[in-house]
Image (cartoon, rainbow, N blue to C red; front, side, top):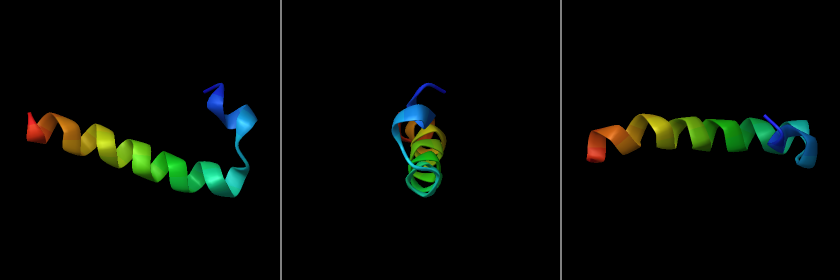
Length: 30
């Protein structure tokens, strides 16, 4: 992902968890 270039590794880990969580929860809410 090109976003990795713009964020630190630590910040990306938290962002990846939030983003991945959104992917899991979004289909369930619709």
